[in-house]
Image 1: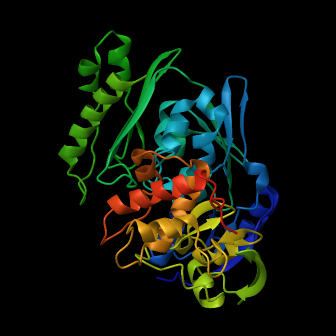
Image 2 (image 1 turned 90 degrees about the horizontal axis):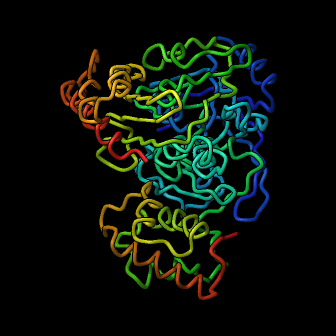
Length: 268
Length: 164
């Protein structure tokens, strides 16, 4: 399967990428790792008229810790996140998630910024960003994760706006992220993440709706002394997942509760 | 409209004019004539098209050729000198790690990257390292044996695990 024809330009800096996007107009799209975009283009689900390739934007490939925050450049690839000692020390849940995205080949290419901007409901990092109140930093503003994931594949990014960085709070306490999937390299049918922070537990859910969900009911129950079993019963509160070929809505609600309980029980 | 692509394939510098939508796998097969890299599922799941990009395994059906600008690529043809076999190729042969052989180049390239990181992988580590590759006839038992045998050969001082 061959994508429809498009124009291609390569950016070497953030400034250049934004200028190229602006010049190419509303039918342009950014390509980072391309591990989601290219399959969509080959199936003609996406037909951008112009791709701005940001793989040569070296200034966006970094991981650093500053003032209690882990700052990760948008072009940092999954394999780098998984292996980074800085990430393993300051936000190990991010490294653990990264080591289970897709397969080894996908992890060589896919990027943190690409996952954020793509905003697939089954993406793992958006759940972590949402549950920890991370900030998505673009070339022009900072957007809280809670405001960033608006709907399926929908974010507030302008057509010529580039995701540059994600800023997570550091958290190295007990944590666990579990995905239910049929094959090792599949997207999560449902995922549940838990992270103990100084302010208590944070709990997030993947693929139980069009956007990632912070399970505040579970967090509140844990804060008032509930056991993992009691707290996890709240994981499906207020959710309205849809049914698809992989899981019915009811099964997704069940998975949300079971995976949340297991994640809390296994958190280390 | 073609754009200039400069890269190194199996140690050889190349300059070609390519269309932006040309996928890396078709560039390798049809422009470079390196047909050892296979197109299997064409949906970036099976891993038959795996090549090494600066030593990292990538699915060449899921990359534009132009995204390899300036990179150094290794395909199955570049793993060993002509007439010779890489330890993984020898091991897949000796351990019967293939039946029809269609998935084999991709498995060997993914396994090359795996052994470069970890020359003594456990069964679990081999399973994880090769999770992006599918075999539809032999199954994975002999493939795992082959990777282990190649790891032993490499550790015993055969050719280095990284090709070209």
